Structures are given as C-alpha cells and as structure tokens.
Length: 109
Image (tube, rainbow, N blue to C red; front, side, top):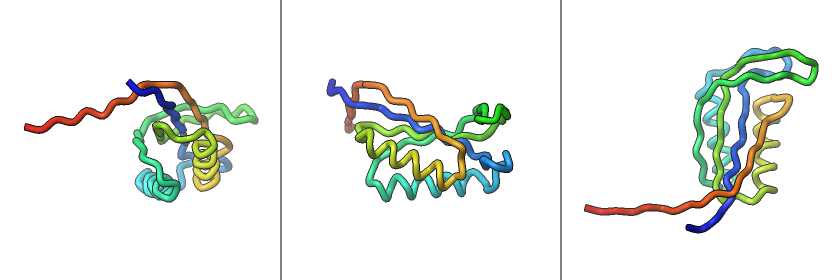
C-alpha cells in the first residue's frame, strides 16, 4: 500500500473573545468547505465536542470541527489551519500529522 501523510486540523467554534459560538455550526461548515475547495484539496470533516484551556487559563467546552486531509503538503495544511483560525476567530487551532497507508477500493456488480 502506498504511504502518504494524514493531517487533521481541529477547529473549535467558540469565539476567542466571548467564549460563545457566534453562528450555527452549518455556517462554519460552509466556510470550511469553501476554504478546502479554494485550496483544491479533498477532505473529510466530522463534528465533535472538545475542551480547551486558553492561554490565560480559562477553560471552555465547545463544538469542534475535525478536518482530515490526506496527502496534502505540510505547508498547505498550515495555510489552511491559519485561514480557519482567522475566519473562525480562534486563539489557536490544533494540527496533528501521521504517516498512513491509503488504498482506494472499487467494485462493481
């Protein structure tokens, strides 16, 4: 199986200043999809819940989007993460990366 890189960007939806989610989750999903489309990258996204400690020590629990990208160069992943951080008005977003194997399975009856 061919080796590639899997990157995941975790983006909270609570505003960095107010600590509240300002828009419905579908609005954030629409923005995220437009960002991925503009970079020309295929993606998967999941809605999850998470907790975060701000730099000033405040703790918040929030809705989070988990964006998975396969085989996307690290520089592009970082640019996408920066865009989402700014567009969603976050203190930061978390990016993870790991090598993985990918295979596309096709079958017809």
